[in-house]
Amino acid sequence: MNLLRNIRQRKNTAAHDEVITLSAPVSGRIVPLCEVSDPTFSEHILGSGAAILPECGTFTAPADALIEAVPHTCHAISMTTDSGAELLIHVGLDTVELDGKYFKIPVAAGDRVKAGDVLIEADLDGIRNAGYDIVTPVIVTNTDAYTSVTTAGNTAEAGLPFLLLTPKSK
Image 1 (spheres, rainbow, N blue to C red):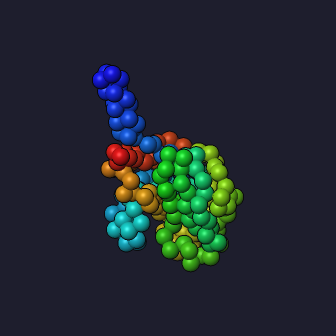
Image 2 (spheres, rainbow, N blue to C red):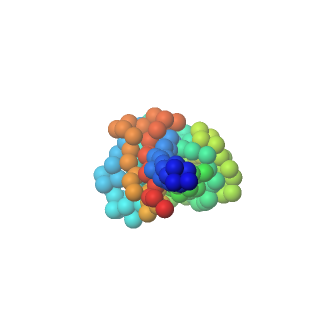
Image 3 (cartoon, one colour):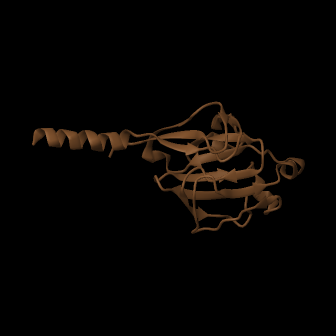
């Protein structure tokens, strides 16, 4: 009986210690949040994560998820992954001021997406030419559910591991 209880306890502990891997939504250079010029992100006000200086304007789902919100300005998207991570992908800084110009979002709040599905199409040249920084914060807004949120490397490749989340033990 003791052996069975020990096996169950180890199994439950292992489930809580597993690292959740989220894929990069776009390829580019990873930028630590502390280097992002907007204090909303650099001071981790919305949560932890990392930013990407994107190489292209197609942003994809980092995991299977439910789309929670899509602002009418189409510059950002929030979702809850099937593993429970609450994410915000915010394309550029202050891009809300563009009022949707240079952005297209083929999904809506309430849609289910699979990892790799297109979430946002952005005209990065248009955004840059309009005077906006295209650095893209990817934020885990429920950071308090994790003991750590780290990056998987220095560069992001769309669809490959990007953020590593270690859930808190329950």
